[in-house]
Image (tube, rainbow, N blue to C red; front, side, top):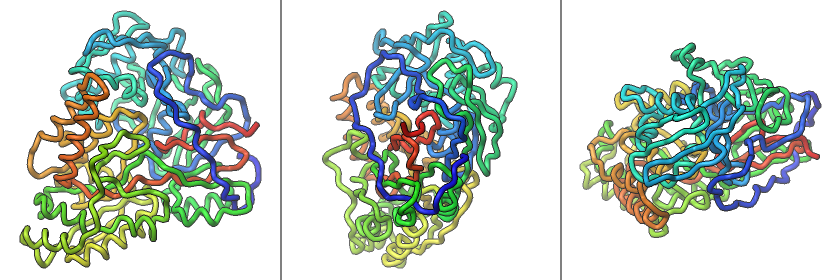
Length: 515
C-alpha cells in the first residue's frame, strides 16, 4: 500500500450484492472476480493467527481459508453474488443417485508449471478418504464420498455413499492439491502450491503472510501484484491499524468501534452473515452431561439484552438452531430459548445443583465480535442462577487445539462457524458426534442419523423434512448455548471496490481499485 491515509473514515456502509439463485453448472468464470491490474500491494487484516496452509488441516474462513483460497481452487466456487460457478471443473452431471461426473478444464497448471489433471483431484479426495486419515475434515468428507475415479486426465467420477444433491455446492471449498508437492512436504503447514491466482512468498503463522500474483494463472488476472495478510488478533490492534492507515481492509470490529472512523478515507459497515455463534459444551465435564443443566444454561442467558446493550448489532437470537436465515432455509417451527432465570434455577435444582457449580469458559483472542464484553455479562447472568464462570483466554492456535480434545477442552467455549458453501447437511454436520469439536457424554446416533438423511435426501422437500427433524431434536437436547449470527463488521478503504461476503471471505481477487 503506497498512499497515505487519514486517521478516521466515513461511516457510509457498503451494500451487499443482491442474492441470486444458485446455478446448477455452466459458464466460464474463473473465480477472479475483480479483474484489472494494479502495482500496489493490497494489505488485508485478519483477526486470528494462522494454523495451517494445508486445506486438510486448517480452515477458518477469516484466517486460514481466505489465504488458501487465494492460492488454491476447487472444482466449483461461490461468487460475490452467492451464485455457484464452475472453477477447475467446466461442467458436471449426475449420472445416477450416487455417481457424478465432472469434466475438468484443460491447460490448467499449478503455479510451479506442473499440469493439473484428474489424478490431482483423486489424490486430494484419497487423502481424506483413507481409513487412517488424520486430516481434521476427513470425517466430514467420508460422510458423503465413498471413492473417486480418474478415467482420463480431464474426467473425474465421484461416488457418494448415497444420494447427495448438494455435491457441487459442497465442493466449493474443497481445494485441490498437487500430489508430488504434498508428498514432498509431509506434515508441513507453512507451505502451499495451488492453481489459483496467487503464489505464496512467505508465511509467519503468528503474524501473517505475503503473496504475489501468479502471472501464469489460467483465469482472469487479479488486480493486485502483491498481497500482504496481516494478523490483527485483538480489537485494539484492528482499531490502531485502521487509524494508522496500515491496512486496506479488515473485519471483526466491535460495532461501537466503527464510530471511530468518521470523515476519512475508509468506509465502514455492518451486515448479516452466515456465521453463527454459540457456546459449546464439553459434556465430559460434570454436570454438563445432564440435559436439564444444559437447558438451564440456555434459559439463564438474556440474548436479546446482550444483542441490544453489548453487541450493538441488528441481529436476532438464533431460533433454537445452529443455522440462520437468510443464508439457510431454517426450521420455521423453532424459537429461541426465552430468558427465564426462574426456569433455569428450577432445572438446576431438579438436576441436584440447587447451589450451582463452577465452570471454565474458554475464549480465544480477537476472533468473535464483542466476545469479551459479552462473556463478562454472560458470567453475571449465570451467577444469578448460581453458576460461577472462570473465564480463560488463549491465542487461537492453542485454543483451537484444546477444543479438539475430550480431556483438554474447556467446559464451555465460545465458538462460531461459517462455511464457504450452502450445503445444509454439512452445516448441520458441524455439530454431529463425529465432529472433532463435539464432546457429547452419552453416545447417541439420533442426530448423526438425521443428518445422514439430510445428506441423502433425493429432493429439496425431503431434505427440508429431515432438516426440521434434526434441528428440533438438537434444540431439545441443548448440546450448546444458542447465541446469534455474528454480524459482519468491516473497515475498507473507500477507493476499493469490494462486495462484503456473509461467509467472511477476505480474498484479494475480489478487490479492485474503484473505476
